[in-house]
Image (cartoon, rainbow, N blue to C red; front, side, top):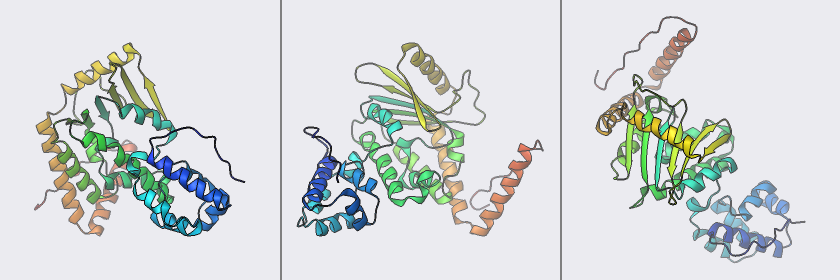
Length: 318
């Protein structure tokens, strides 16, 4: 038996309208979610997400539903009309931040280790999600990347919100995916950094600041004048709009910006990293593997208290 939800009233979400049409057609055909899932070779919970408008249905599954449910191509026509990047669901623990981000007039970020989601290229986001729990679920992996790219749409439109990003140097030195992915990500940072509403600065490893944040954080300035601070720990997000808390971290952020590289010097550092990744990308794989093993061995000696051995960076043409 299907578990039909009560009518929630009008909706402006095309994805939800598609889901409701799918559910109506399924019920008219006398099929349960589980029965349709078996015909589509997926779990009942996946059908539930399709019908809720929370997950984009693959094109081949849409056409299969038109055939199975005898809808004469109606589902395909509806599916083509949906902007899935705008409607795909984010993880529940992250949804509150996404809602705030979608309305913010200004977004200020300090980021460790990984490129901030609003500044990631698709290849980088894909490689990053593959490192996590999504690596064995291609459909979920695709959904996550689609959602992340969809968040950037507002930022890249004319008149988009102000976005000021201070990236710790670890962001551009920590390899996600492979050198090719990192080279494309550096190119992307240089490209979006040319936009009038986006400013990217790098805090080098030797940056000396009075009070440097201990973790990545975001400051959101909202249309009603309120400000939020957001940070993350394992599997959860932390929010505060307490004036004293926001003011303290906003002050630390402003002080930090006075100690990091200028926008132009940051672009030069990112461009330099891009060329280094380009060089690594072109090196034979065996050479890269040998270098990575050497670096891992040296990092191991550092962890055991041994002397730090500097690895000279090779430049293109060297």
